[in-house]
Image (tube, rainbow, N blue to C red; front, side, top):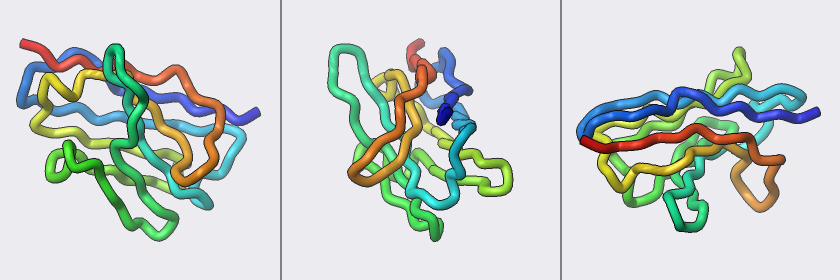
Amino acid sequence: QVQLVESGGGLVQPGGSLRLSCAASGIILRIYTMAWYRQPPGKQRELVAAITTGGSTNYADSVKGRFTISRDNTKNMVYLQMNSLKPDDTAVYYCNKGGASRLNWGQGTQVTVSS
């Protein structure tokens, strides 16, 4: 059974940092483009960042220069380093495959940026 488990969220002040982790079971992540998505309160889920099997990355304009996606294929993990956080980054964050198809969504991890 494929399972994605996100962790690392929390409450942080504006300007702070968090590192999100995505652990996978039942699937080998290294053969897929992986991505982080987020769903702000009352809004649609959106793509935040993606990383290809070769390590190429792309980011939503709103997070460029502040967020960094990475992967550790030996641990079957994907990460999202988030710096200079803003209140607009408040959302539930999910990891999943990039591209056209998705795995079942995990429970996500809540990130709240507030003073």
